[in-house]
Picture 1 (tube, rainbow over the protein chains, first blue to last red):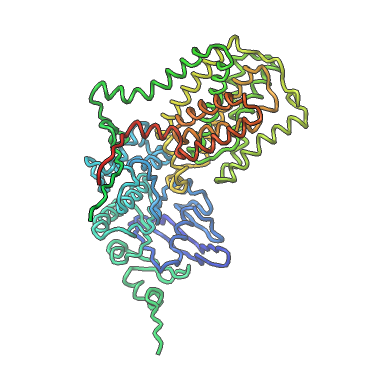
Picture 2 (picture 1 turned 180 degrees about the vertical axis):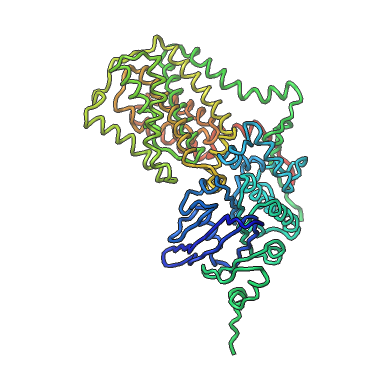
Length: 252
Length: 337
């Protein structure tokens, strides 16, 4: 982890009508950091991710990525700067073979800039990438139509789609939801490896035990507000966090 | 108690079939024929039909079918990017008027007007549609429906480009054969070209935009730029059809923006089976001759035409081509349960 700040968020706010989904959130993210983003359902995790990646325009606040303001920029512009995201709900092109799903990011200006992914090479790059993520290249799995694959594979396909963009910052929105324990156990080391190789990661997750094994820092959200920020143990020890998670308002 | 013997239909893929999109097993010349036949048949049919019909009335119908097939292909291409167009008449009319205008006012020969109309018409249509490319679904369709009507009214009220009289006595094709074979070759090129293009990486991106534009955006791709490119390609094909028709008629008028050029290609694509391009072509080659054959019925023509359309959609909602394709690749047998 270096001291360079890769992402700086200042007083970010998003209101949907009367509801404030994200309320005055500020934090810095350093290069190589592994940040966990947690909070009860509806606490604003996904909205925060949508704001950073440009899918939702903020009501107020400022997002800076590598000294460049990206507030309100188009999602594809932000993606080409190196911020790649996964989706909470599985979103794959289910009529295409699994590896063809990766053609879209491989076709992007960002990957072209790196010199990879020329005509006719993209299929091979896609298969290599999937092989790294546990789609055995000698099996039929990478060639199967995505819609026929089990949920765990689709989640990993989404992860592969993010990695194919060669991101500098990877944002995972509940990657593990709906995955079997064995699948999580197989995927976790892959993500750890990406982080060790220098990839900065933000991971919104409900499966805290798995998250805390890899995340060095967590931010806890509740009703759109940041209620804790720090190492997992410290953050979870806070009374406010325990209240938000367990609702420990015992009376009498 | 005696149990009734029940039967069920079982569908089995024929022995040779692509295992996936990339792995093929070609074992024998029989297998090669199996794959070649459906590709060669339409080409042979398209080249032979004009010869069989000659320069007669039905020879002209072949030409019209080709024009509508081109429009249907152009509709299907836009639909495969998720842009449902109700304005093929816009493409057709733009091409018609660009070709007609250059020929009438500047006396350009046909060899120049047709390419100029293809590119110029496509450019005009793309510029007109780019501002609304962010609209989705029915909102985009509405705009495409209005634009050709707008042009027809502009030409009528401002009396530009010949006004209500249109542009007359344009350069004709030297003979019927040249016209019809240019149209046939164009249909073959566009049909096989589109089928190829949509499976290339560029085509996969376009199909991705239809399936889920958010994922494509997250993949760093400017979907509006790609939609604009798709509109340009589609409009070029439609404008080319318009230019051909203009020189064939030796006339261009407001009718080039008529609703017919929107509805018939759309019906052709839907009856034939959208999404395959072959369906759009097949549908046009069924509907256009059918509509001509019904001409003898006079007033009842459109009513019967409508009934046939509805019946076709009710019986084969997937489209004629998809039905034939399925029957070709699978056989059914009845098995006892």
